[in-house]
Length: 146
Image 1 (tube, rainbow, N blue to C red):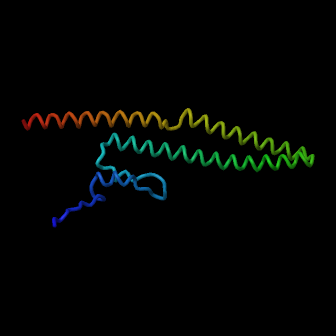
Image 2 (tube, helix red, strand yellow):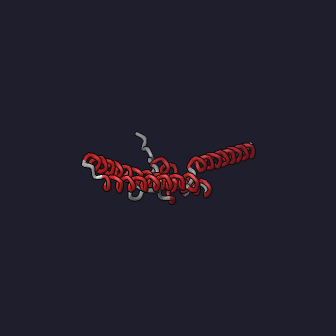
Image 3 (cartoon, rainbow, N blue to C red):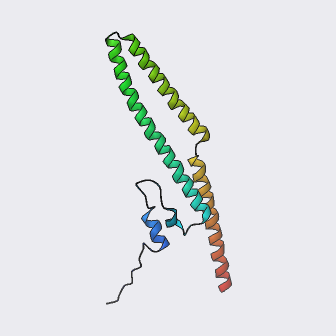
């Protein structure tokens, strides 16, 4: 029987990448686990992580606001059924303010927020450049061997 040597995949760069990013409290990733990658790729991955976390936080906030608005609509409906028009008007104002806030937050995110699509494009371009450089280096090494 031959003895098989097993490598510890947790210690090799390939093993660390295969396991996926380590998460802290379910958010983010540990950039140290990607030390085998170039600085440019690490920066792009960090930007993607930050952008996706920001977008997820924004979505969670919108879910909470929508839930609050549903509750406010229900209260306004009861006020209208009971002919309490002053309270219904106040609740309508609350809904208008909430709608304005959501709209402003969305517009700000669209105009100033991290563009995930742009970051993915930059990451793809960087990976293609590095692949080309790697293939060129391999060809040069093979030609030197001959």
